[in-house]
Image (cartoon, rainbow, N blue to C red; front, side):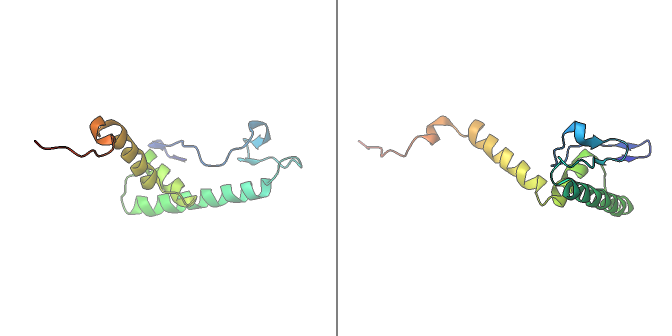
Length: 114
């Protein structure tokens, strides 16, 4: 996604394509019989492009920041994922692994009082 000289964001999407089957000039999957689902992939890429431009225009007019975080969130929205949800899971796992004291991980044991 390139917007003038001020914005050049490159992120990976969720679609994997063999480079030998990619047409760089047309930015589409080549029309080769051996490539399965080429029409579905090309249609999805066209819809993604239209969605990104629509969201970019809306957010630009609303004076929202458009950067790589915006691009990742917008891409996740398009594909039905959740950028914030994935981020929250990562933080939670990190907290459990590194912040929780080791003695709390052991099962509860009764303490005998004198």
